[in-house]
Image 1 (spheres, rainbow, N blue to C red):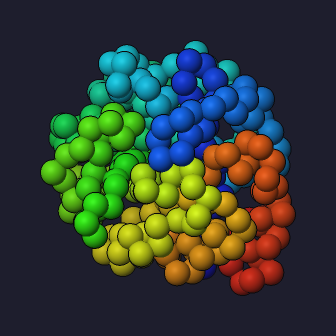
Image 2: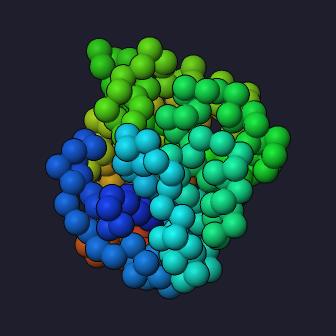
Length: 251
């Protein structure tokens, strides 16, 4: 059985780590270089760096900051935000990324996924999907949740997989920052309909929420931010809790 992964996420705005609720009301959560190093030392399986305003501000990811973080890591590092081309990915891999995450640009230009998978391999390509449940239908949103589309979550996830995505990072906008648990019904739907790994994001608040998303939600990995940034749940404690309950994790 493949081990379930615990992934802290650094949401970056103006060079600082931030965290909000439902994608708004952001507050400062610390220095991203210090946090990245801490998570690497505390047993995180991977680290995700998302420049959350790069697309909205129509600029590229903060490569210099990403490089500073990468220099302090010994775990896989995913970088996302403002990626629109093969050249953007080359630049981020050069500063230390192991994987890259594409979101809005892939929705606007789905061929981008094909191009990136062809050039770098599917194992390098994470397609992030921000979606909101409206009237029992999950709708994909862009630009940090600011722009609604007519795409449906499952349809877009299937297309992304068919084009070469190696993983899907699904963030529930309804659950983001609420600490009420992950969107397990939607996660299970994705897991049962796709063959690539699904990363759960949005809603982590307790150790039980992680157990539930790995069992009920059938997620392959779980991503969280504030509960790790503010030391509400130590990563090692979380992994020991999961192991005691029969979930395969790396300790």
